[in-house]
Amino acid sequence: MKKLDDNTLGRLKLNILRGIVYAILIFLCFLCLFFFYLMVINATRSNAQLATGFTLLPKEHFFDNLVNAWNDASINIPRGMLNSLIVALSTAVLTTYFSALTAYGIHAYDFKGKRLAFTFIMAVMMIPPQVSALGFVQVMNKLHLNNNYIPLIVPGIAAPVVFFYMKQYMESVLPLDLVDAARIDGSGEFHTFNTIVLPIMKPAIAVQMIFSFVSSWNNYFIPALLLDKAELKTVPIMIAQLRSADYSKFDMGKVYMFILLAILPVLITYILLSKSIIKGVTAGSVKG
Image (tube, rainbow, N blue to C red; front, side, top):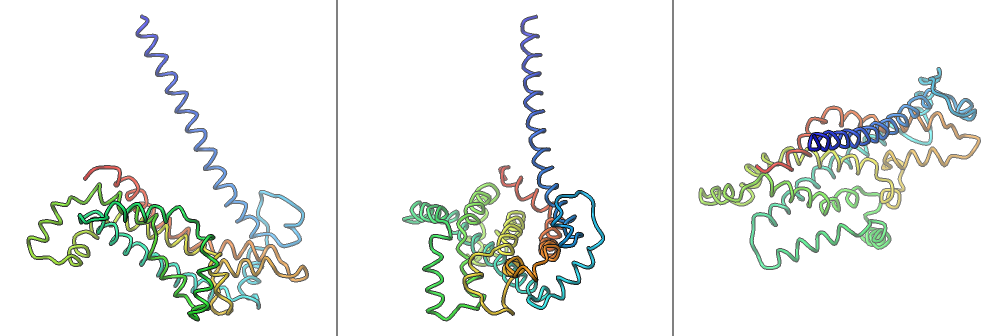
């Protein structure tokens, strides 16, 4: 009887703990969706209506804000979105490919200093980009690479966080026997990586491409330091430019509309590739 009571009590504690976890997750999901909902609602309100305060109901100025933002003389939204797409897509491709290649080199080779190389890469991950930003901008100015997308794209190759994820995933799904068999068959290292390793890494590559794309798309700090020409500015810079307009020209409805337009490509990417995200996150935890 006592054993039965202990089992019942244990199940009761487990159910309570599970209920608390679910409640916290539901609350966090509500917060995320609620603020996104507010942004959509605010994109339907005029600047005067936004000044009156908070509301949960949409208004009738959605298309007015869309036209005003799209035709704003100080910014070029289609050009800005194209610029962000070029930078974000290029960064995502280079980041994932070279991070996977680096992870393959650390995983598949035994060489002196292997542990030191891994430790060094992990140490670099601890350095925030703001620390090296001033020196980086000075070097780019000396190389006359300001108002150029190269400093925004090429440094993305060195991505310690992506490398670490690829390395952990590779240890789970890539047996070294497969690499050795390819070498015995006469396959070159790059051929082995491109034709054998990359297909196995597809879920991880999909996840990191999405995250790298979103990170680059939302990046404001470095582009704002390097890009001065209007035709080269990316979406975050243009949003900041709208927000910093003088009071007589400031239109918060237009700002909310531009933010909504800027989020749509990221949202569509997540919706289309959500299965790849889930598969890539979960597959790496299962030994292949």
